Length: 597
Image (tube, rainbow, N blue to C red; front, top):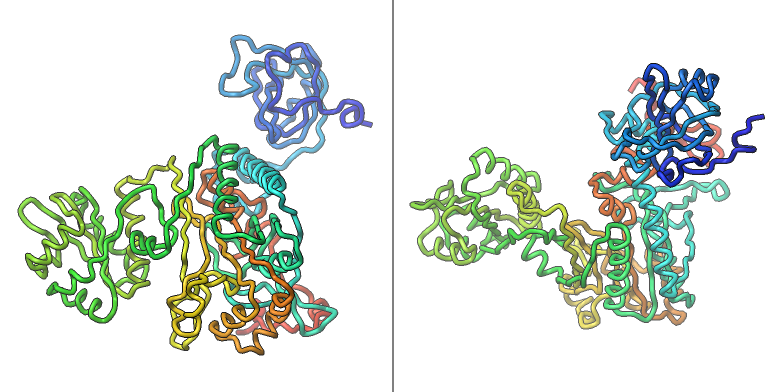
């Protein structure tokens, strides 16, 4: 029987030993990072998640251990016992353990390893798909381990923070009711109830509201959620959120609570001070930045030039404004030096987001240069100069379209310009609360409204009488917390009155019968003494992504999916047997690879 594990326990991790440990006999266990034979002694760097320690195998100390070491290769799992010695003039100042090495007198190989398909190091040229296929190897890389350790620390601090503020960590079901009112649900068939399905929760929304009705007035949970939607760089089909709900509150209570949490996390993890977080209404954010999650690290604010362009001879813009659309402009200060190719690429950004194109003008010392300059009278030029603070050397960029398209295009043009002109400080943190959202999205051709946040969001009390007469003008008691142009989380005060909730359901196109079928349990619960309440959910994956300084959310999730929502390591999703389907009373209509079709 091995003396390691039974008699010789691991005494230190591979990042622990320092000069003060010289003379001690230690036991280390881990993975071989690299191997060097210097023509007498063999040197091995041993790695675990804490760091690296150099091992020295000297034939004069133990010839058998030296002979064994000659076989070692990267990623072999070993245990060693030996004495800590000082490296003296050979100290490696780049390693925390670089002042010492362990002179090994006992070695055991727990398991050899095949040659890995990529290097287990922070610097790897392996593509992401290969890394995801061999995720168990990718997870050994120090940068990924650092991210997951940070994630643990974030969870730990979050639990401590909410516990100190009187919250209860309560669990909600994973198998729940399908109420498709946004992203598609992941459905789970019931064997016990053939033909019926559970849904995996997109959020614990109704359950946490029921906790409030039940009197558990401060709830939080770090929970898993699921949405069957197309993926983006910062989205996954299953994700984690920090979920919070409170009774007897106003939005200000949420701002104070969540502000305290992010101040704690940024201080403890990054040693960054987060001050008071300013507030900005949705309307102001859309007017100034064209988006409800503005990046405040740079200027380039949008200006509405609809009235001015309506006076111009540029028919394309004038027609848009006369038809009820808007025209907006950005003054890129000093950017008249950009080439035509650069400007064309900026125009491509606008068309990518639905605009028909981007108009532009360079303010030259002797003229206004650009395709639309000839359509602008002296009066129009004077108004644009005043509105945009235009000066010689500036580049003016314009888009005219319907409200949504114009703002989408201009918001993304602003980001592209900020990047092109190097205006964005990567080390800055700019926070803002976006408030006073519309309760409903724009009315569609069908006459139906959609919730801007979700159907349980409370209308502003002063707008309750507009629910029937003018729903598009109703504001919501909703709020998002935004940092550096990313929505970190969002929430609202909830509807706690059964009649108001029923009215909102009707405005969303649900008949009373449909509302009862989908949400009858909640409507009935609201009639049993429901307190005013509200909450918020923070995207835990996105939060850790930002703290880790990466723009790829898969780098902070242990087992992420690809952009096609597949797990390359386990080859899932996968087909199941006909027996399994029959047991669930399900027949697949998906074509099989060997079908003629």
